[in-house]
Every structure is written in C-alpha cells, then in structure tokens.
Picture 1: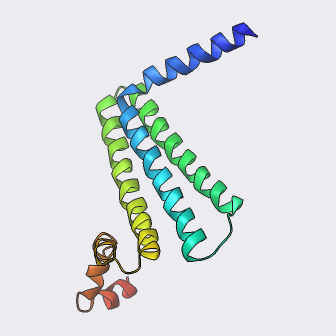
Picture 2 (picture 1 turned 90 degrees about the vertical axis):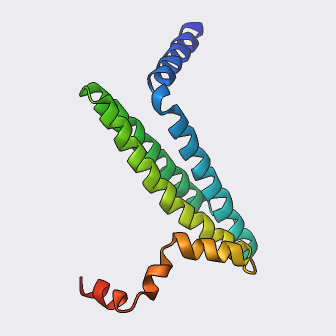
Length: 145
C-alpha cells in the first residue's frame, strides 16, 4: 500500500513539474470555470427559482475537464514535436478564447442576478458584441452568409 502511495505522489509531482510552464494558465482557467459554475448556480437558484440540477453541474464539470485536458494535450504534443513556444502560443490562444466566451456567460448570469445594475448590463452588452448588431444592415448581411 505504501508503494502505491509513493508511486502516485511521484507521478503527480512529475506531472505538475512537466506542466509548470502552463500552470498559471491552468489555474486561471480553473478559477474561470469555478466562477462560471457559481454564478450559473446562483442565477438558477435565486433568479429562476430552479433547484440544484446534478445534470447541469455534471455538464459544467465535464466541459471544464475537457478544456483543461485540451490545454494540457496541446502543450504536451507541441512540446514533444519540439515546438514548445508554438505550443505555449496555442495554449494562450485557446485560453483567451475560453476567457472571452465564459466571461460573456458570467456577465449574462450577473445581469440576471442584478437586473438593476447598469454597469453589469453595459459590460455584458459590450463584451457580448451586441453593439455590432446596431450597425445598419449587419444583421441582414450575416443572415445571407
């Protein structure tokens, strides 16, 4: 039993050391997923009067796991191809994409939780690119494409 614990501890330490270059990114993404989960849960419980839904929670945790695995895999593959800097750039690009989409969702939930906050409403409007829909004929153009 002690050998198994030692093996697991050494394996975990080795993995953490290997992924140290993207450790801050993985931590940031984990915090982003936690914020998304918490504000989604609060919006559901308080604003929509829903009960806790294990299925929705499982989907949220599954998405987070897939994205974290995607980031780690991207770094691992790029590093083993001898392209560590390219792998870091790819991980950064995916991270900023996740940051954008999950921030829009977090602000959407904040807007539901605080419907009278003009600041939250404006920030949601701004980052969700709703401002682009005010450009004349843009919606018509997008529907044609």
